[in-house]
Length: 325
Image (cartoon, helix red, strand yellow):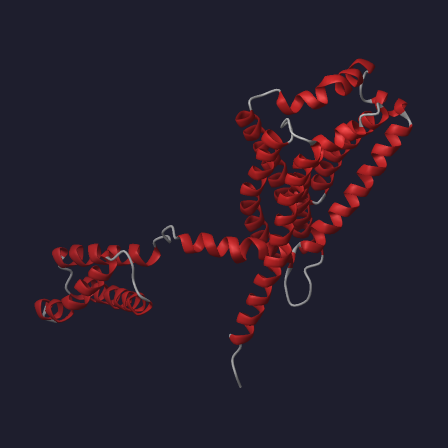
């Protein structure tokens, strides 16, 4: 085999491959061309190595192949369209598909927490099993209200955001084991019930609600979503459903969990800002609750209405993709 003739005949393809590899953006046709040229070049390199192993030619072609491979396998660059698709389809769709889990969980836990508040308020001796009388007095007199203005607003918002994001992430990540989610939810809702029971017993129930509602509507919803999605992941390997293995079901639910985890990060930031700036604000209670309720209702509309629209679009796309007979 004449090496010079072989290289001369194919050098144009190698140069074209290198040219495509250097471009920042490729059309679909150019991307397909790059893959084909890369596959052909690897064959050419194999032929040269086996028949006429010229080190210069091998080194040069290897360099071009490395460039081609890097272009084919490189990660996707940041694209605002990806962010837009996540906000309009990915995140709301994940919330909508898991809606039965987190809505049911929210209703159950709110009912249990309300019952606990009334139970403790009706029998103050129960609170004394967990708090001393001095702690109860401080909680009612100053600690509960003072908690929301103890630190500078921006620092408090960051602290609340971090704590809530960690709790939600733990619920999602531990969902596969189920029991840790139940423990995390139980301990947090018990604390809310204990505090609420003490405040109601002291005649400060309106204060408790006025300081909890502005941020709590959105904040607790996010926690319920994280827990519901986590339990949904755990249920996937218990009951994977027809036509899927447990591994496939678990992987699918886990991917949805990651989408929800990412989407809840900015949502919990909004809840943290409400808690730091709106809850302790020196404005009428009705105004604070109205602000928190408005943000909460907008989020629910986003999760259920926008999520349903995203679900419909995906269903239609899947229908159009079906092969025709």
